[in-house]
Image 1 (cartoon, helix red, strand yellow):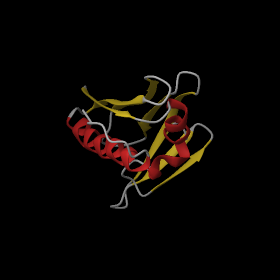
Image 2 (tube, rainbow, N blue to C red):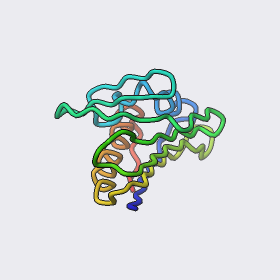
Image 3 (cartoon, rainbow, N blue to C red):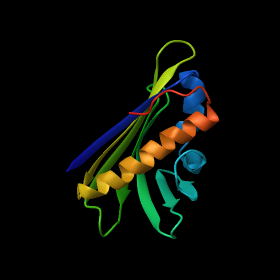
Length: 133
């Protein structure tokens, strides 16, 4: 199984960042996809090339500021768990951590690229830039 993790510090409150990142229906506002649809504990994401992925929402914990999802019913992806955490680092600063465990492991690299781009996009929305790692 491939495992990747990206993180970035943002000079905004964890609550402010979570209001965007913690809303499964708003993923397209910061992650490099063109749209998404949420119904109950299901989400479908649309990629620019026309592909559509079905996901199960595994965890949506507003107290921990943790969102977890799993890509399902996909002929290529055997097992997947994505996790996004928004962790306070003072009153007006937080760290956003995006991690993915995926089989086949080579697919984790694709999601890692998307995660890096998504974290970069958060800095366009919350503009005080810190390095993405």
